[in-house]
Length: 329
Picture 1: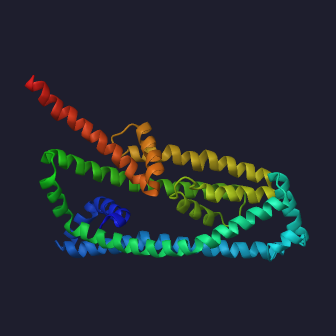
Picture 2: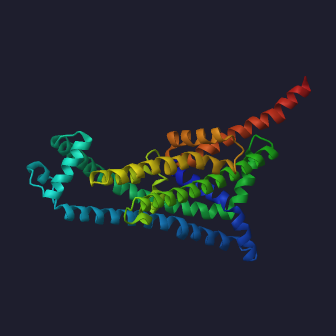
Picture 3: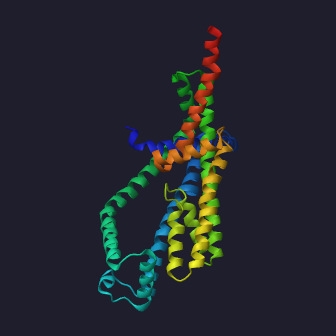
């Protein structure tokens, strides 16, 4: 019954583990009113994390549509049929010829690609709408679960201690590992996203791309997307710079993005995570890549968490069970 909600419930558990200390401090300020403190923290997550992310997504979509309309108006292109008939305005014709020359494509190949993309978008539209509604529903489930985990998290932990086949000390050690890894994953991912956004804004400013802060904001949001990540921002920007007669700026931006933005993610994020996890930097890096490959976006948290649990169990086995076996012999 709970399997369809595994992702929001897991996120709620991670956030509840991260917010335990703020919950204790807030409950103390409110003179022990834990229910009120849990409600306030849940509302804080809603207004500080959920709503801003939704607003950024809506803003990015709106600005993308505005930018597309601006491009159409500037080039005088109103339909794909103009590509087929060859009746493009001079500026649009020059840009298209430049793109075809750089990409070594023919006009027929471009038309075929546009038709396929259009068909794919039309077929995916119902699924996108359904996914949006599902995401909103899962967000509500996550917030509700977060409230109850903040309120009764201690009882859940005590119940786990009572049913766990491990000793109470070992179960407590695993719970502490879960809190540490969850905190390190959330903080490390957030800091890495902000850092990538700032670096991208600086790169865009260097090559004099308009609205550099907006592109930095898009990069910070895109850094949470598995596999493609920040490339969905800087790769199109480099292509646009190249085809609009700014090849030097395109090369500079591509080099800046690969070295600082992408390189900073692959080097900085494992170092940020290592600060709260007792793992070698190489293992943290491997756990991030493996987690993203197996679990998608949740793998940013699940990957290091599974590795940390495995290493904790190995340490327990060597410390407790191997020592007991040596004592018996």
